[in-house]
Image (cartoon, rainbow over all chains, first blue to last red; front, side, top):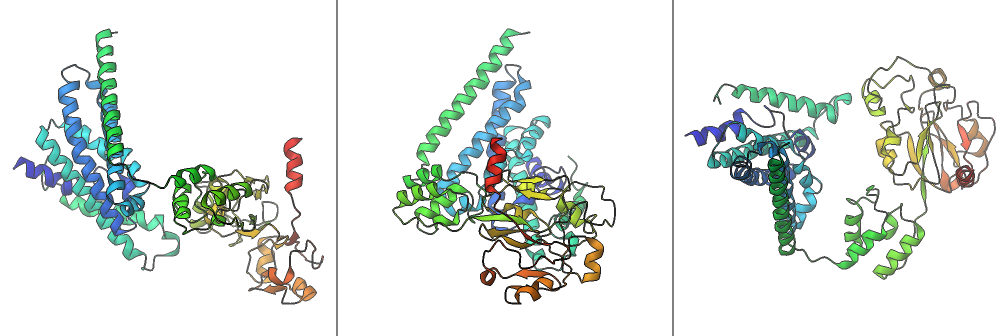
Amino acid sequence: MKLFIIFISAAVVNNFVFTYFLGICPFVGVSKKLSSAVSMGMSVTFVMTISAGVTWLIYHLILVPFHIEILEYVSFILVIASLVQLVEMFVRKISKPLYDALGIYLPLITTNCTILGLALFSILRNYSFVESLIFGIGAGAGFTLALVIMAGIREELELANVPKYFRGAGITMIVAGSLALAFMGFAGLISI
Amino acid sequence: MDVAALLISMGSMGLLGVLFSVGLSIANKKFHVDEDPRIAVISEELPGVNCGACGYAGCVNFAEYLVKDEAEISTCGVASAETVKEIAGILGVEATTAEQKIARIMCQGGIDETAKKAWYVGIQSCLAAHILSGGEKLCEYGCLGSGDCLDACPFDAIRISKNRLPEIIESKCTGCGKCVDACPRDVIELHPESHRLFVLCKNHDNPKESRKVCSKACIGCKICVRAVGEDQIFMDKHLARINYEVYGNESVLPTDRCPTECLVVIKNKKAAEALEHTS
């Protein structure tokens, strides 16, 4: 049951994009087309889950026993950066068109605060290994959800009659804000 | 200072680093994608600025399409003539170059010439000012002078004068077009190097309105049109436009009776700039 709560909380109630305002860069940058939004979401979910697991292992098997918890940030960034490199190689081999579509956004995942935030949160909340993994999957799902909703709206906005000085960045920010407000409706649904 | 902790930290992080590097190199071999070796060689030859003016996502991407024979070498306006020859040699094709293009600022309305409608106190960016009810200049078409073009230029070919107007350093300009995209008012235009005569204004307002906003605006008096005929210079809603195909590339003013001096011949500055840099 707790696993289910963790998943729903990370995906919807405490959505990383709309509640914690993490990962805004790819959120605004990749959400122009629905197809690239979905691909980006899936890549981030993959990196998130694996890094959640690996960082948990490193923290509890290396950092804690040797009392060097202070190296949390350093080691986590190392893990995340390597994983993203791996994902990039993987994507390039499996599907070149996808690789071309995502382009520069793949390395962007590395500096994405969402992934580091995820790792740090699970340490803070003392999750077990399995709980961390579920947390990662949930956060990835939530991020994908945010991206897909935003991409859908932005694709519609291309054909809409936006007031002159709101076009481009202006209306994007307003939509993002409205979505964040909407997601606030979930607040208190599950208290974690 | 606990030496043991220091050693353990260095050791464990170092070990992790080595572990991941080894893992990544194995993955690199395993996920290796066979690539035409010419792509790497051509990417080295290309300028490597990744300005995107060719329409492809950077120099490596352009090289990929060149190798597939789906792109023309001349699309890269930045590559020098020798680079084009080298690349043509690698690909085994004829080297063709398109004429060098240079960016021109189609506005002479600096601080001395123009009237303001408000004080703009905000983000010092042309785009920001333009979005906020059109900035502080009364002229809706003119240059805002905050330098978005300067920021966009990957070759440092633009500087802003004391009069708050951008100046193009012709020897550095490669015609990549990034400044054209950056300008929120479309004041910058790309012209082939051979074009010498310009109407440096974008103001389409009638004479009464244009005079109010800038002392060097094109007021639409048609003196230039009447001097050489409508086939060479024509009016586009109170703004004179030059038909370069008919007028040709002569560095001669059609008339010296332009009341606001917006009709200008820009001399070849490259020689002068070369002197400037050596002095």
